[in-house]
Length: 475
Image (cartoon, rainbow, N blue to C red; front, top):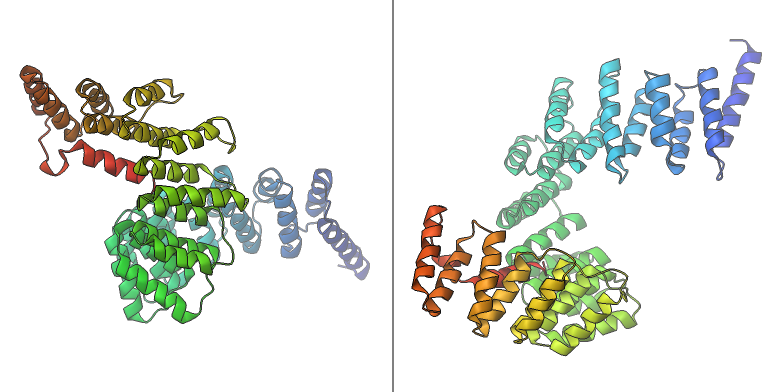
């Protein structure tokens, strides 16, 4: 290349970079730049590629411009360019865009572009987010084949893939086989056990992590606190809180909210208030944790009071807030207050319509307080199909107030929704027994036998089943 040609190419390079760095670059200019990149063979230049991909992302053209350029028009881009594009796709919130990171990896494989250790964490992130287990296993074989199985960042991404897909036992096996582990490795395993409902195992891993000398980070603590909240492990939650204090960590909004949630679900909301007072910043999730904790403690008046304080602080309530405050009203028998709040929800004050959980709370409130006909009317007027929680709330209220006919009606509705749950059959048989309808009671027992159901003494009380369903609304 002559010095004149080099100077001309350098000018084109500079001009393209200046265009790409413009804050108001247009779609038309991206098309022109794309043409110039191809015409002057600048597609291998990683600097131009970086800025071109960034500009495409800001304009929403990753798929139509960048993906097309580096798969259709330029089939073997530099590995840095491949990784940059895969990374941008993997960070998108749109599932189709995440899918493109996997498609681009497949394109690399087809064109013989060898990946490196920076490729796999982004590909595996997309696979994890999309719960693509089979494709993930396929990529796992590539990782082993090409010698990246000992890279800790790749290994952590594999752990996250299997944990996200619910393959927690395989995730644990992979973890045990790792030659080295860092705080991310331990945190992913804790999160995996928590997500599949094995809260005791999650906390056992957390204790092993402490014993191994690996210091937890904020993400570790948030996941461990979530496990504590879900299984009522107050002692461990208190230890975590003490560790946060001793470490001098600032009580940020995520950590503080997790602590409040843990204390609330473990029946110590008063300790949650201490955390609330320490926090400099609070968001709607923080307020929800406080109101939910008060609801679980059956402190209805306090929950409503804090709900109004939340509004005065100009924190906009969300769907979860309204479920919590309506549950609090139900548990405390605050009928008038609950009706008023629900009426405001119906009128559009909060910017969203009531969902099935809000209706379940109101049916529970009305049925508990003996307004059975009002509760039934609300169910019939619901714009959405009533769920097991809705009918369960009505049934519990009917049993509480000894309304046998309406109890029978609600029990049949529950059997229709949950035909494999023996508790509802048992309660219906008991209702018929109380009404001295012995033939009908016997028919229900015969129906249970025909469907292969046996009476479970541990769950024969629908009141307990219903209580569990309603508590789930707060979790």
